Image (cartoon, rainbow, N blue to C red; front, side, top):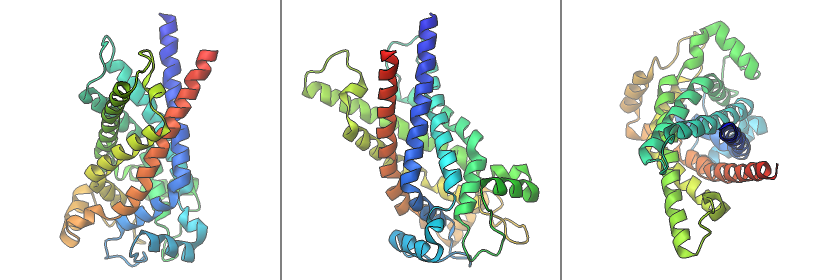
Length: 315
């Protein structure tokens, strides 16, 4: 019994470690596209402190020209910290939830239980990391056109927000953030279901060792395809929540008045002035960032997990 408990504990920490490493690798490779996406999301055409970008390529060139590398990597520290913590906690909570739901079950989990596991993990991660994402968004939106004293870093941002706006400001965008839990649920459910299809296809296509695990049957190309395709589905279905959250998390004006009061206010104003397309602003850089990022994440995650399991077997 103690051996089983120890094995489960090892699995959870291996999963968390693999997720954290995957998250860091993803952010380091794709951060400039994240900056562009955030600026597209909040630019409703009615503000004067943002450059008007025509497309993703022009936006990257413009930011690099006027703000340099610092502009392209604005908010990098909170992004790395938030992503690393988020992925680590996500895979940890997701693994524990799956273990709990599969207790006393010999068969594989149903899509509904995969969805429940992912949703539970996402809600817990959202609660833990919302302040970090708020700071990341605000730092990415700092440009030379801003009249407000910019944040010098993560600590200064947190201290300034607490002093000027109070601790509740750290949870702006929390409601759409909770709704975005469905993003992870959709992505992981699609990932698991597509994974079953590919594993079944490969097992039928060639004679596989019946004792082989999924990770032994699948390779890095398979993980890349699985991660990318599941991410596309999740982005298309949940992207409006990302726009709503980004707009809510903007820094208040010089007089301290926020542009949007709550999520419903964002929805009404966006629909009124921009229509349906307003809810999908920045989706191109989002896809360019997140689809390959999801592929990188799952390649790193699955291979780090395989390495950790192999190391444990050797011990």
